[in-house]
Length: 428
Image 1 (cartoon, rainbow, N blue to C red):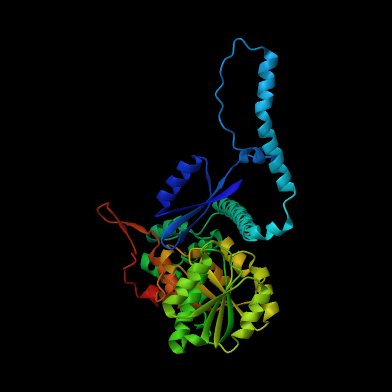
Image 2 (image 1 turned 135 degrees about the vertical axis):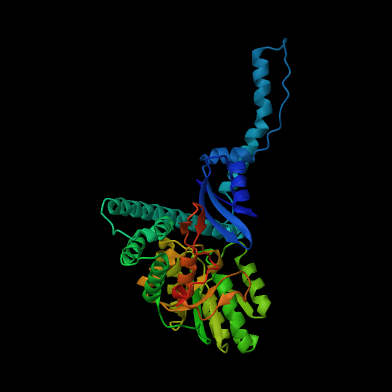
């Protein structure tokens, strides 16, 4: 199996392109937005090839036109064919001997390619592991839902049926849904039910507002595609507005993804902040020593091997503070993979808030984890962020986007509440 990367303007075009290239049975591993485009990672089955077959593909065989010779004997034709095939055998033997006797001095020329293939293989393994964990979580959620369906739930007031249906249709963890529905048993109207849910959720995830630090050395980690580089650029841009650009430095540490370094350079150029690249812990140590005069140093880390990368960074400089970046619409498995990676996180950044329709998994995670939230981004521009971030806005967004369908007296249907609906009780 081999992983392929497909870029298109939207999800439909990417899926059509994947089907056109690899057939209708292509397996989509992941989907993400990359600089305004849709990126699909698909798995393609390829036949195994032996060394002899690979060598044979390198031999250029010229098509031969056969002429029928009636007057020639079999022995003459066989001798001629053997003589004509001799150059091909010699060419194959020469190429095989050249591959075996290749000097070791040529191997470093392929070091970059080997590293790239190794990184892609690790990324593929992590994607497959993440998919398996997602499927296992879905199976557990489905099993819990079946068990709860056999139990008698609370009997709600008739006016709360649209809200109950909306909660059942929303993409939220089963445990959170059960708690919210149980909290509605004493309510007698839709408005009071929404107010109860809003107050309950805000109380569960309430915490003191926290701003990001303005000095020191800080490393930012998270899964690939979570918006780490953009968040680092926002942080650096804010710091450069308060001090000179010379006092701020961005380090891209061991991120070997195609285009990752170019993206970091482009983002830092918008605010005039200097950026450098580190390819190993030794180089990181030299860069930190060389720029020890900088008031703020931000280290952007890759999305693979989060624990290993931060252990390397802390071995170089034990005073480095770690901060996590999580997408607003990330799943429970993705959030757990970051927050439970074994890294001592000092704070959290929430990215892509504008792309999240119902951030219920994030709300449950915040209710279980008291980690401080530094800021949240809601766009691609460096100015599209909220700092400090109020968790009440996250609850308002989740409740406002609940698909509550309420019947009118004439039989028509209406959606309530809408994102523009003003409800003082829910925004208290």
